[in-house]
Amino acid sequence: MAVILEARGLRHHYSGDVVALDGLDLTVETGQRLAILGPNGAGKTTLLLHLNGTLKPQAGQVLLDGRAMRHGRADLNAWRRRVGLVLQEPDDQLFAVTVFEDVSFGPLNLGLGEDEARQRVTEALDSLRIAHLADRPTHMLSFGQKKRVAIAGAVAMRPDVLLLDEPSAGLDAMGIAHLLAALETLRAKGTTLVFTTHDVDLAWQWADQVALFHQGRVVGQGLAAEILGDSQALAPVHLQVPLALAVGLRARALGVLAADAPLPRRRSEAAALLEKWGQNNDG
Image (cartoon, rainbow, N blue to C red; front, side, top):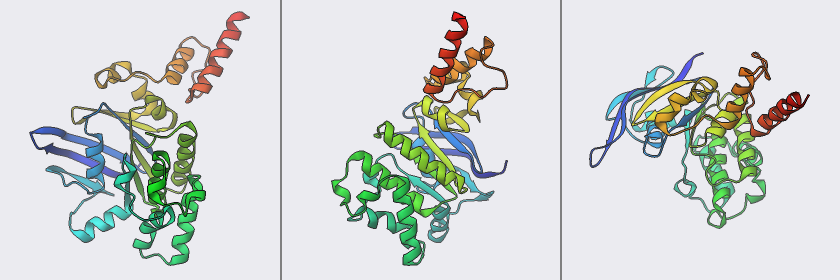
């Protein structure tokens, strides 16, 4: 599969000689959903800020379709049209008076006509289930609503790659479900998705690939089942095998789940497998 976005040997130190990225390498394949997992301070957010050009590498480079990023004004504007970023704190991105105006800013800044921009905004608001908030002042929104508005603004831009920093933080279960549905719609239209998270269950439920961060480096990257099913690889980053995956792997080992059958991705699917397991044992 083709690589759309790549980091090679990225290094970044903050003041006080705090190492955020230490020769980091990462590849993002076209059309994939990549989850970046690691403890606080591992460098996940710093990486995203490099991938969309907000931070300039102190060493190494970022490439889009094999071409290295340049940091001139026109180059960065063109880059950010293709690589969008949604920050963890929505207040860092919302600035317009109303929700509709805020989500409109990006499409209008692309030079789109008013009708096309309005259509994109309407679709983005609908996909995040926040159309009813269109005329609401942004300062009167809850944290979860602000989060979905920030994501809607990125969705309306229709980037080739969308980077999301802890997208599920602050959202309830229904909000997360709506978010994933909206992002899946975006992916179906060709957008590659990269998201950071502490939630191994979310990563297993939704990611195609996973990258593990530790001390400013990627210490493992590959298919979600291979990385998240390896307890030894997860231990240094203080993570455990997702519950649904653990149940599925155990069921396979015991012959309850066929070797070629898909592993459960959600806890509900794991619960159904456990119920089947129990029924077989009772029989």
